[in-house]
Length: 489
Image 1 (tube, helix red, strand yellow):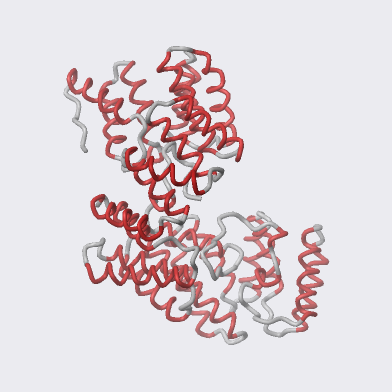
Image 2 (cartoon, rainbow, N blue to C red):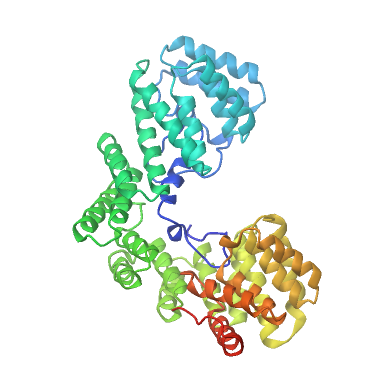
């Protein structure tokens, strides 16, 4: 729900740059499907999830039973690997309805949905050549470029789409849909570049054309807030009102107080963030996701005293919810109650055996206990969990750092060094805990300057840091012997 598997810490989605909010929505456009609620898709759709309406992406509105049957038969044919049959059924649908999208375009969407991006792209290239006046191939290219972080490529493709959309008159529904996608895409580009005033302009145009879209309203509220960095009270009120409107449209949207608190937190204004987090609990304390998110926020601020009452409340609301169980395990780790932490984390792991965070936290609490008690009996299990996680997520830097830390304590130095070398391939993705591990090893090797650099970076990060006290003590020790930089709190 909120926990992001890419960190030892439990950085939630809201703790990412605000620009990512637009990218999450745009990920649902990879095969050309415009979401009308908050539930954007981050992975390719499976065949069972594709309906005629999803495949057409807002192109047709009400379909005749015959047309819908043609498309369903095309989907069945594609799923069975019968591309010729798929083409036959889609061509039949095209014969029934002149405003139907190009058949080759729908085939390309199916390839993307089946996680075949290479053949999907090749098919789209053909669509752009054969149907040069149809904007959708360029829009799909633009959407995919933006999700991949190729912002300039995306901008050029969206602008190409804008010119084509102006002249497009084959299907009014498709034309409107294309314009909405273009506005969302250009807003996403502005968000990635932190050009918030430009984002507001695009998002207001999107909301004007699609006022009942809760995703658009949420994006607009976020951009309005970020445009003044939360310093303009009138703009903050407008942002809050927009976020309220989003939740009226879709009650599953996050609480406005919670969102504003998260945005203040991103900007480093914890005093204002705390006000809104407290208001979120007062106004929405019966919603589990709100309680869990605020509890997590307190944990990331190293405030167990504030987090634990909320975690108890969350357990009362739903004792089996994965995030509730996992966060209670993390809280137990923070207070060094290793037995309780293991109970919660094992339960979380059994609920979702492939979950990165549960397995990673479990490996870490086991090695924590070994280090604290000097009893090596948990070392083998810690190693097993760390190896399994690193195999499942071989490119995750924090999976590698956890494995390296455990191997280091097993005395397997060369293997530990390889794991840490892999972790350092993406240093900006290292969690504070991972940096502490590296600092401790560098200190043990006498490389105090490198150790101090890791510790200072870890202590400055506004994220969960279970080894904060140990890091502060180690940095003080280094400062006393080599004049290292003091901590910045």
